[in-house]
Length: 451
Image (cartoon, rainbow, N blue to C red; front, top):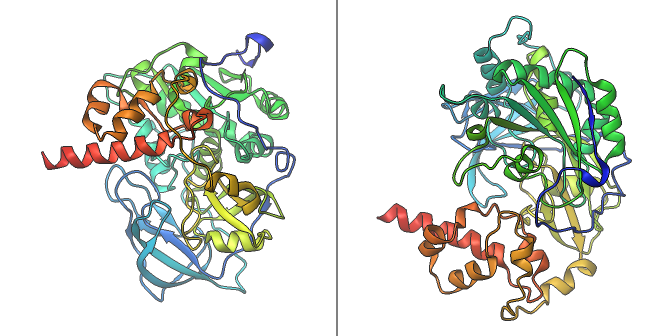
């Protein structure tokens, strides 16, 4: 059975959350466009959770676009592929968005090359085993493109005592400004369906739900038109609310299942994959290719040529902004959305597989934030009412201020916080709660590592 599930006022959602302004009107109607190649592309060998990939190229070597330049190093690792045909100029440490220095391959594109990508050994759906599909995903370098960059093959390899009954394809995209997934659903719906076929075969899921928020009716229409008769797939429309796209929140909204504390979706029989990740599986595996580019939204008040771009991975942020007409008064740049995306401190870091957007803001938007004074908590409980996982951010913030980090973790569920920023958004005292929680997690890890 296939179709659309939408009960209008009764559409699925979750308790708490916030409603920030969407700011999607500038780019949601703009088709995906190819982005030019930067003079130098920087490929960090760790663009995913897990071990860095191991380079298989040398300085001075010519590489073809899509060629493997690094192999996976163990289970929690994926391959890397050349984003352009060019010459390997350096292999050395380079800064990344995390602030870490990561071994990276610097590739200078060849200006006269056609930049065509050759097909490799295909993973044929009709005769591939689940294990072969997972290996093909790992070798294609596919990770979660929604921002987490968790290796997709690792998510699909669950223990023998677990089973999957439901596959959720996450097309919610609730972060303000971002319209990457929206355009993928509109323009690559056939690839999304092809990716679902691979995922269903790899997991033996008996049903699939494509989750889309109600502010994307054209995407719902496009996906519904692409639904095949031989797959049990539904498109479910959810109410518009942030952070509806968070994995555990989405499972609760759709299935009324509670992922246990410290647990994973597989513990309740579910696997979630981002819609763009699913499309890449459907696009790459039949052709035996690796991921060397991705769709991102480049937007914000500080960008003239806003849009959704198919950009080579490894493109420096500085080049991307200059190519899109950056305002000279830019004061803050985010990688990803403004709620959860980290602020950039170095414009020479590259776009990676987990980059869903580049957002630029000028002094006009940020002046008030920079000058904003932090006041004492007034115990208004707005943060409690907004927290989607029912924590008490006010109390956690007080514990963090008093450096009671282990108590936060042991007695107050610190690690249930996934840093959505809803508490920051509603706090009238402008207390940087999420920043406190990030510091607390870092300190707890440090303290426990020394014990």
